Image: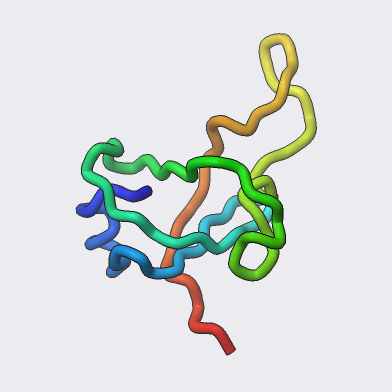
Length: 90
C-alpha cells in the first residue's frame, strides 16, 4: 500500500508492479493506492512464500536475521526501503 500522493510523485498507478529495496535486497510487489497510509510509509501486508512474488523474491529479502536493539528479536515489522516502478518484464 502506498499513499496516492506518494504514488503520483513517482508516476505509480494502482495495480502497477513496483520494486522495493534496500541494502539487503529487493522485491517486486503490486501497488495498491490507499489514502489511509501515512505519506512516506509503505505497507506490505501478509507473508507469502518467495515463489508467490513477482520474480520469486519475497518481502523477507528486505530483512535481516541479526538481532536488533535493545534486547534482540527479529526486525521484520519496520524497514527503511526505496520504491520505484518495476522494470518492464523482458
